[in-house]
Image 1: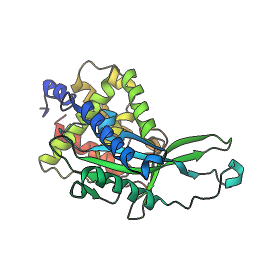
Image 2 (image 1 turned 60 degrees about the horizontal axis):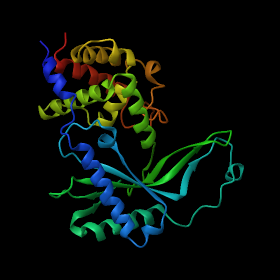
Image 3 (image 1 turned 90 degrees about the vertical axis):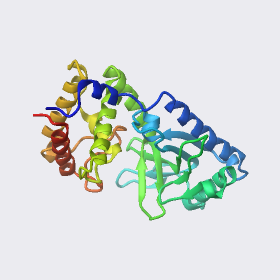
Length: 297
C-alpha cells in the first residue's frame, strides 16, 4: 500500500505559506539597502537577485534560508573556446581587483547594516541570521561570468571562488526562466511535482532513512526538470504523475548512455560528469530507495 494518499500528495504540492514571495522580496530589499548605504559598494556596478528554491518557487520548508546573489559586473571571469586567446575576443588585461577583496567588501557592507553578531562569513556565502523581521539569508557574492563561443557570442552566468579555493560557475537566471517555461508547458505541474519530490526526501530524512548526502534538493529539482512534459500532462492525478516519473527516472538512469546529455535546469551545465559530487549510480539507487519508501508495487 502506498505511504501517501492522493490528498497528502496534493498538500505536498503547495508552498509552505502564502508569504514566501514577500520574504524573498524583503531579503532582496535589505541586501540592496546595505550595498546602497556602503560608500565602497554604492559606486560599483552590482546586480542583486534571488536564487535557489525561494526564487524558483520550489521551497517546501517554512522559514528555510533565502539565497541572494550579489553579482559584480564591472569585471568578469570568462572561458574561451579551445585554442582561442584574449585578443581574439577583444578582452582587456586582467583586473587587479580580486574576488576576495570583493567578498570582503560585501561582508563589510552587511556588517554595517545588520551588525557584526548577525553576519557570519562562510566558505561560499555570507549569512545574515534570522530575526523577528527577517528569514535567515545567505548572501552569495559573485562575479559576472561569460562563456564564449567560436562566433564571438557569449552566455552570461556567475562565478565565484570559495574560501576553500573551489571554483563555482552557474547560471541562476537561466535556471529561473527555464523553470517558469516548463511550469507553463506542464499546467503549473513542474514546480508542484518538484515540491512533492523534495517533501518526500525530507520525509525520508526525518524518518532516519539513510539518504545519500549527494542527493541534494538542487539535484532533485534537476531530475524532475528532465522528466518529459507528457508525464506531467498525460496523467490525471499526483499519484500517477509521481509513480510514472519515478519509473521514467529509474529506467533512464540505469546506464550512462541514457542520461549523459542531461542538463541542469539552466541547460548550460551537464548534470552527470566526473566533476559533480553526485553520480548517475547515486541517482539510480536513490530512485529505487524512494520507490520503496513511497510503497509502490
